[in-house]
Image (cartoon, rainbow, N blue to C red):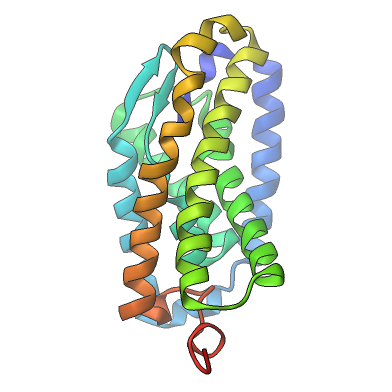
Length: 221
């Protein structure tokens, strides 16, 4: 989900730019760069970033200034952690912006919307699910991968709509009939995409998924 930065005031965009810069700095500080001493981890991260770049290019404009695309950030977060998911999403958005020739004024806003928010929600839900639910393979795949991704996609869509309403670009009445009723339909494709990716990875390449451990989720179950 991306929105046109030209619909927002320069003052708001500057605030978002500053906020995103601080978050990106935090992400760089928290990233365990030592893991990239393993060339395989570098290749996996770059491959995931390129896959996300392709995915984000397959968007559809649902309203002037509002375009929809699948996120895939839940899988990115569960594979690499919050900090690398934020950095990876920023790199993907950079590639999309350069390739599509869209304006730069909304870069930080869209990076926050499509990168920081989904990654943060996924990380928070991962912690809560680990705390309250049993550590089991099917819990990880169905709840962390499937349900979390679907919920994150829906929340991100409604947040984008709320930002457009708050900016004055659209009224609630404008979006109530044309956009808002259809956001729940985003749940299934986002859920299936991320859930399927996580199911395949934890089955065949669990070492690529930082949040999954055979010791915790499989042994003795």
